[in-house]
Image 1 (cartoon, rainbow, N blue to C red):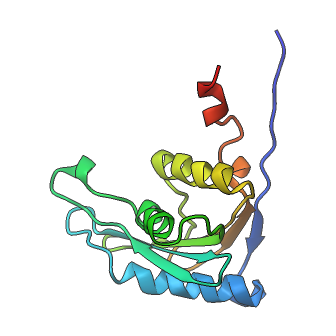
Image 2: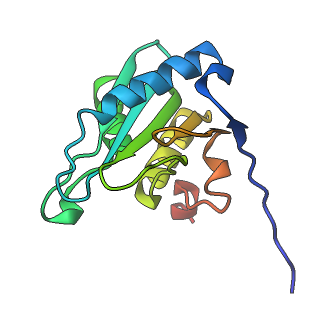
Length: 162
């Protein structure tokens, strides 16, 4: 038997004031995006803002449907819009935040597996990692430099070529 270990590194900040100006501004944009979420069933609203290499900011919010699998997460709303409207322009950074209508959300929320896999596809396509900034309604902010942090054992298209 052989043990395989991969270490993930996140950077923790106590407030947005500790972030650089670009990250701080993008997190504020993600908080604005929360307001456009359609979440009548879960009451869990997620906002996302991503910054493209050309400086354009794209917003996304979760959009629920009574047939739960038919909804779409904020991250994929924003990424798919960016990919269709700005093909070939890299996503430099993405900020994600959430608000719950039923409990206090004072911890950062990570993306679901489907969103992480979609984000990984964009990283692989653009050949560069994206910075990921996470915060709940309040509290600590976590920053990661790329999807390797969340998906140390990745499924990618190279495996499909074999």
